[in-house]
Amino acid sequence: MGLLDEGGPTALSVRAVAGRLGVRPNALYTYVSDRQALERAVVERVLAEADVALLAGPARSWRSRLSAYAIALRVVLLKHPGAVPLFMTAPMDGPTALLVGEQLIATLVSAGLSPADASRGAYLLIVQVLGSVALEVAETDGRPPLLPESERVALRREALSGVPAEAFPWTAATVDTAATWITTTQFVWQVELLLDGLAQRTNP
Amino acid sequence: MGLLDEGGPTALSVRAVAGRLGVRPNALYTYVSDRQALERAVVERVLAEADVALLAGPARSWRSRLSAYAIALRVVLLKHPGAVPLFMTAPMDGPTALLVGEQLIATLVSAGLSPADASRGAYLLIVQVLGSVALEVAETDGRPPLLPESERVALRREALSGVPAEAFPWTAATVDTAATWITTTQFVWQVELLLDGLAQRTNP
DNA sequence: ACCTGAACACCGTTCAAGT
DNA sequence: ACCTGAACACCGTTCAAGT
Image (tube, rainbow over all chains, first blue to last red; front, top):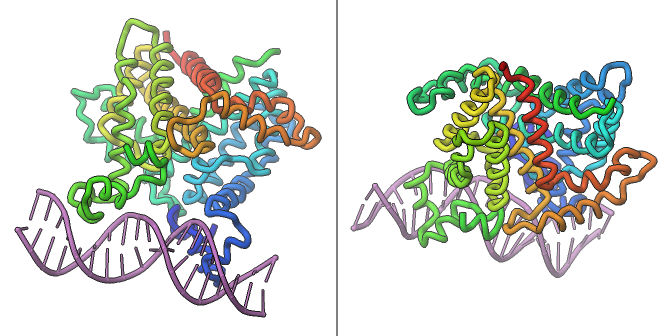
């Protein structure tokens, strides 16, 4: 985690970890079978930083619980941007992933979805959170702390400003919105839309 | 593309491309500034394989046009699984990405969304397609052709079969559904749910 | 169980030099 | 403009050997 948080996504390597531990590279293979196993351990650690209890509390509505967890997970991922690519390349099969999945399904069942739809909905939410954070991080150097959202929006607006209005009229007309694709506002908009779709599938 | 399609995601390297061209590694830097530039070129090529015309035709409904394109893009990505990780790590700013964005926004505007919501909705769809395909491919070796869906589902069911029902009751009860998270059926379910959410935001 | 030494087959990139 | 030769600072992984 230290390597990733200091040097970004490329800083994690078997040799670098060994170096930080004051040990030869091949010594790591006593503890880990593979570079991939190292990456899965990082994914597990980062995922555990997002508070699953946000899903458990029965006090708030199912919608607010799901959006609270989605937002919390995004915040955690953006704190460790170097780890984000690993979430998209390694299968999420760790113990925390299992726990998160269980709570997501339980929440959606309590909302009135069939178990099968609750399962599908849980995956939909995971895809959405991981996908949007990955695309967001892809536009950065992956080293925390990321630039403030407002600055990243300004950079995007700048980059989009050259779009020719004749060939791409709608894009040119909505550059200010496209500049905000990587913001919390867009993220929440997306999550709310998903929750609307899920609400439509509840059986009272 | 040949390298990626034969050797999977790790097969693309500056030196491997040079080797295939019968040239020294550093000769590539005459044509490409960076390894990243090479990757962006691959993304551009693959994205161009999905038929954008599916979005343009005014004959069919906006919903069927969007789902047709989403499904077509997924098919193209699954044909080149080695290229999929590149979509999540490189900013999509090529000419084809611009064209796809324009057509998505235009389609959503024609559906009755405000330009701003159409822009947000376009990004939502891209996130969903790329995110779910990336997670799907992450469970494979990234070398085409992928195993048939039915076999990948069977492998997932096998892997999930050990989940303890006491600790994870809902997960255990819905293993058969979770096994299908990587299928076309789940993908279409997700897209239809998004389209429902978008339909709710149309102004007649 | 845990580590080292040595080695193998790789990387991306730069720089000076050639045509 | 396009390529080579040589070099630098890296990779992941294996194998035999040591304690």
